[in-house]
Structures are given as C-alpha cells and as structure tokens.
Length: 54
Image 1 (cartoon, one colour):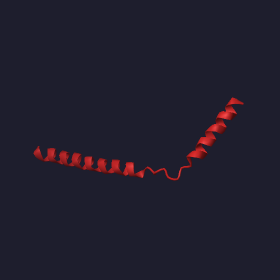
Image 2 (cartoon, rainbow, N blue to C red; image 1 turned 90 degrees about the vertical axis):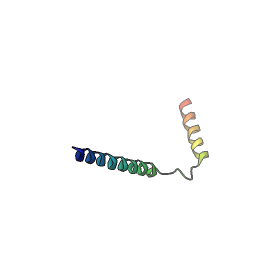
Image 3 (cartoon, rainbow, N blue to C red; image 1 turned 135 degrees about the vertical axis):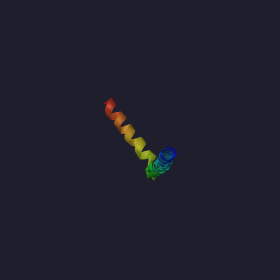
C-alpha cells in the first residue's frame, strides 16, 4: 500500500513540474509590442470619430 502512495506522489510531483514549465512557456510565447506608431493610431481614431459624427 505504501508503494502505490509513492507512485501517486511521484505522478503528482511530475505533473506539478510539467504544469509549471508549461505556464512559463505560455508566458514567454506572447510577443512584445515594438515600434508602435502612437500618432498613427490616434489619427485613425480621429477619422473613425469624424465618420461617425457625419
């Protein structure tokens, strides 16, 4: 009976480690936003606003 508990504990520990690794990889997978032209975005919003008002 003690052996099965150790097997279960081993499975649980491995699952925890794999989940931790998967969580870190998921966080690293998200790309960074670089070279964003803020003025162009603001201009596009201004255009949409003027179209909606007309």
